[in-house]
Image (tube, rainbow, N blue to C red; front, top):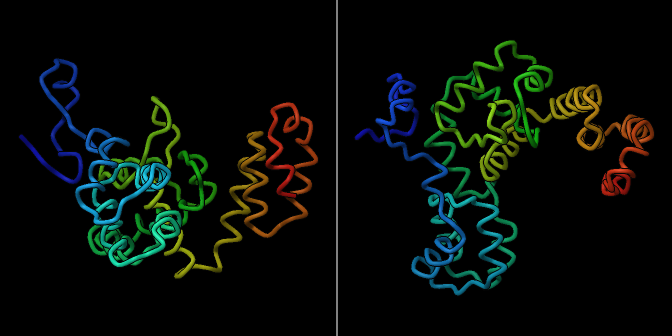
Length: 239
């Protein structure tokens, strides 16, 4: 039996193909909604309503350490709903944990990649290269995945990923604190990439985040009928 925070270095493909290995990963360890409800009932003195439990499930994605930090933050608090709805990876308890146990121990190149790609709601290697400027985005994404750094696959082909909500919050707060001058440029490059791919919603979103409202309107004008056809009125209302 091998327990590790990252994937072990052994080659496991042959064992998987032969059915000779049983793997328990982060998705298996994540608590379900029912388990979150039971955990909070046992671990916290505060009684939570169904809406609070749903919010916790969404924010923590069943991450037990995150839930433990919530129970600590709830101690002595009266406005439970507000605390839970605003709980994020930028909270001091979560931020301190991630900085000390994970982020602070990473190589500088990997830290920089994580920070600059954290502006993306989803990422792939080509997009990450366009936004961050690194030429080895494929290798860095593989390294993030190997280290189990809260990277969630969005398909079965290993193309699209996203960061765990709390980790994305943490990275975004770190980026804003240490590299605020880069934010507009990162969002502008993301908007250009998404527009070139015809992914209009994200193109408009990143143009707005870059503060380039003229470009956001230009992109929206180019794709307005597509947005109306797809019922994506949210993007149009943004402008």
